[in-house]
Length: 265
Image (cartoon, rainbow, N blue to C red; front, side):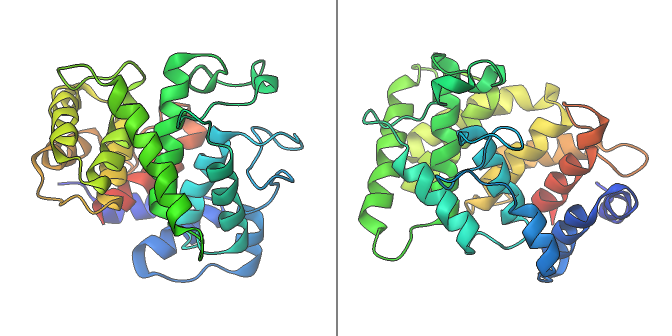
């Protein structure tokens, strides 16, 4: 069994003020201090989304979704900064139902967010749609909001192969699965779950935590067989200091550990 007390201790010892506030919200629902929220919400582009790097003027789909993930852990998706970001995501959806980074970001975007790349386009589509699902609509925009999610789901469904696999990164699978599950496309969602279950035994700690947290966030039962396998994998991959390792370097181990805590709480 995962040792959540040890994981909590790791975040307290190694996290910054935002990390510790995220932990407090996840554990007890304690509201963050105003200065913590100001820090977590800082730096959005004038359009409403967050840029890929500090000081940039062009908003990034990938960076905005990452920031929404942090704000969700602070109970802040209903605040103005997150609402503006969600509105920007909805408005930046392409007519074909997909999302893609601005061409100007080609020189700085990571492989999973490269403009013009089909795999990146599908990942960004599932990521943006997932956060629209989690964030919910603004008052008066319910129909437009639901239509955008439905268009994204159709674009993802159209990409699925007969065996339930998808032509994009691993993360695309569980985000797309979450969106389809939310919309009631249970057959397609189950196909994806089968494909994901085959991968769980060799998945990294970071990917396993992200998968578990994403599917639990849209109310998939913790007793689901895929989540059972993911929980077992999290038990196996927790380190002796209580943390789970990031795939992006030690500086992100706290973030991965918080994701695992969110998944397992």
